Image (tube, rainbow, N blue to C red; front, side, top):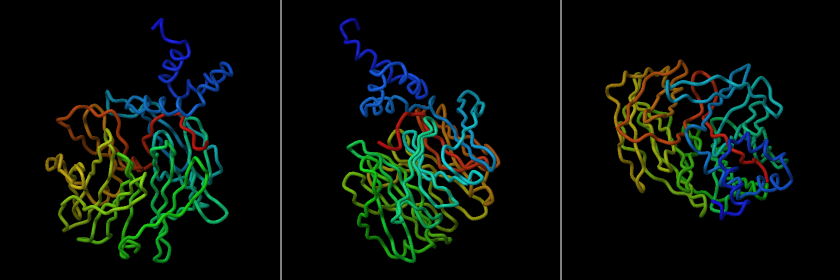
Length: 352
């Protein structure tokens, strides 16, 4: 250690600080401010922050927005801290559409505007433009947040308007939107198909596209973020005699899917993607069936090797996994009756 340059030692120490401490350290001196503002520092600090101990739960209800730690010892949330939105809103009408490396892509429901927001640093960036880019309509549009090989954070916006599909990419680096081609089956443009938010895993954004009918068509659309090419792969081979919902999650950079199936009572299987094919990891027959009224608001998170399946009414059950504990897990955005998401505290900025 004595042979290492002082600059290197300081860099190594500071990249291991919590995100809020990094923000305070910027005021120490001009040299530290410059160092902590470089993209190399932000990238390395982010890579060291993506661990389960650094995960937080953001919950939004009609009156408050709060952040809570996840306590792995008793599988619950820690004390809450109230968060003040740094942007104008009406009665907390903020929907979380996607999240990655501490950034949240959110929609202001009263104006339909898209924003990138880091709730740890409070920095945000409006993505809407005068030429109608960056406006989101629920149940018609789909959003995916990703980072490409050049470390540029981008937003993929899939828009369905009157049977016409438009696909647009926002680049944080150049602060603008552009259109990209995407040819798909005409029926997927119908409002009878529900597009999920994109899940980023291994250089690809994945969307589930599910028909809102019993026994309907279900597929997965894949977007390679570097080549900007789309392709379609099959859904896991689940029963088609009831409603089907697939929830995609990234665990250690491997794509998994919770596939919920049934009609009035639901069962859940966990699948993992290998190549373009799905392999079943586990089934949950011992789990009490889930009524349809609860199924619509299910989400999941993991700690110490156990999956916790939640509904708007609280924790429903635990699935013990015969696997090593996962370091990090990203769930969907509804649980315990609140709008929310699990995110990692980082210093990643929504703008350059």
